[in-house]
Image: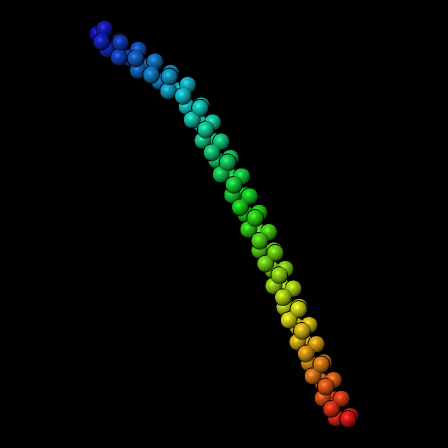
Amino acid sequence: MRVFVTLVALAFAAMAFADEAKPNRIERGAQKVEKGVKRTAERTGNAIERGAKATERGVERGYKATERGVTRTVDRTEKKVKKILE
């Protein structure tokens, strides 16, 4: 009987000790989740910025190519007109 009471007392003490340890684990887990969320948000923001820059460069590149094409066409046309008029 004494052994049984002793075991129950030890079990109760172990549960009390485990309850004290749980908040620390919960806090650590919450900190890890918070850190993960911050990193994910930062990565997402960086990806959006990179995407915006790439789009801007693509639009600018297209605009410049069109401008060069128009300039080439105008130059050729002017040369042909000059040749015909001479």
